[in-house]
Length: 147
Image (cartoon, rainbow, N blue to C red):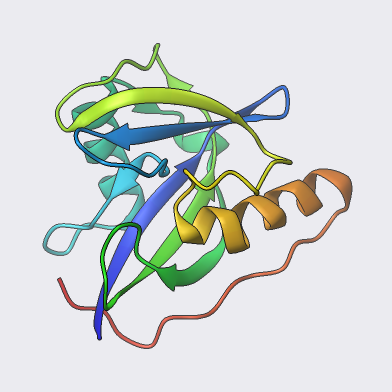
């Protein structure tokens, strides 16, 4: 089974989370992407957010929220591990590059079949719980990653 690593950003406002849909894709996913070379998580987020949304990320707002593993959206025999950060954007997001649509989705609604499996099964339930309590659960931990 192929394994990939993504760095994702949860931008939450008024109980809604910013999700994106790639051009030709069926699933809603988090903004972010795969690290290139020896990029740090933050460098990956900065590069991907400029490419995908035309925005920066407010570094001081970033909080690591865990690592969540599940089947990759629309990719058979591929597992994705999402290193999740919560934080704020600098600027107004707009769909660029491979992003076709931006969508504000209720954090407390993880039943939508359009959600990527990691969002539906782990990330949104964890974020919803963390909005209600001080802690949250972390999904499956990765062992190793390949491109």
